[in-house]
Length: 486
Ligand code: BG6
Image (cartoon, rainbow, N blue to C red; front, side, top):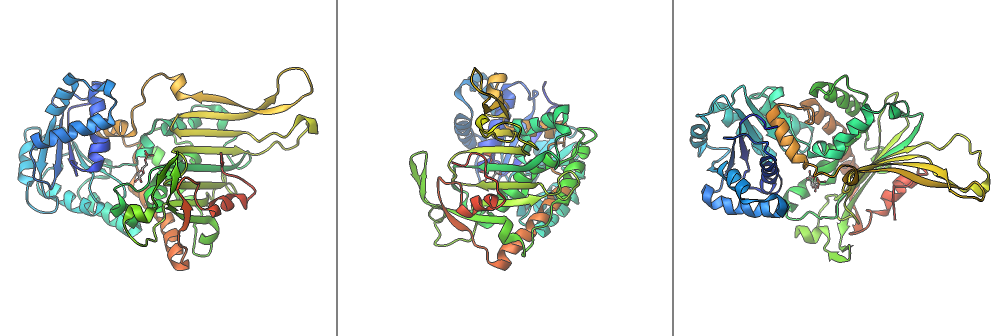
């Protein structure tokens, strides 16, 4: 179903995110007939080039990020007809009159201002939008992460944006919330009665959330070295996943109902302080090694610096202090240059209270629910069954396996496709509210402080391994193991 006609204005429009994610996502939506006639995409940045000069770069990006079967001349022509490039200085006067001129013929249309720039420009851009009277009731603003680098800077950005946009017009993006399997988590938890009575400390032993990447910092060293894995991944993506696993049922899927429940989880996270940080967190930094047979350089070489105190890996043990979860650890880990690209949530149930089977039946594991977010999205429920056939009663672990690719033979939209259209529809359910972002920083900041106060430096790990050995010790100390540790 096509969405209402819109003008999508991307600040940082010729940058990496725009080329890699936003334009391919908009192209796919156009391909599927979701963009109404007349909808426009305006790419703004400081550079001095014409639309004609930018188009070949966009074509190249689409060619790289969209499978050939989805590219055809008619759709490409229609898509390119929507594009305009605008040279503009976000912090000064230059170019703003041209923007006003461009938008003025459609004053009532939905306007999306997508800020794909460094966050320190967010305030200036918003002030300029207001000064030029571009913020109509139909306008929305999208903020890319990171929203700040600590609580104070996040508040500062939220104040600046909030002084010109109402909260319902602000869409703080966390692209993990747009992933198919992440949304399916809502369906799994709240459309199946099976799990709810078991979804608590009585039945669940612990939860693991892993987001492993094989890539290194690539060309983003400048940003990444100031950020690190805790800020780049845990503060947003991993905590959002934790919220979806741990939250109580919202009373509806309305944005504020869902966000209220997530906020309660964030506020219930037990603080990690300088006293505990060394016990419950591990930092790592990758060294050279090999992944899938190919050798790769270490972080410092990728960065081109002799030293760095930035972590490219974090493992930590979190706890949600609520009646539902008291005493149930949530083990989180994320890192770059790990052996495989895999994101998953593992819910480990408690073992049976009494094993009535004779020793010959063999050992068997407790039930486990594995929610695979990427790649190969799916859900696996590990059960114990009898080894079929004659002979004695022998038990074995088996699984109920729902593979999305096999069950639903369609292409899943990329996270950005769904989220960009949700902005046009004004549906903020999959976006973060101001208080959520600030609550997440409130929990993360003491970890950062703890690291600096106690001098906890990142431990080296070889690329292609699962992080420093202390990450394995973190969970094994509690008598547990990471899922699928080789
Ligand atoms: C981004 C981080 O938010 O998420 C990157 O800044 C990371 O460092 C990326 O690589 C991972 O996203 P995905 O969708 O590839 O898992």
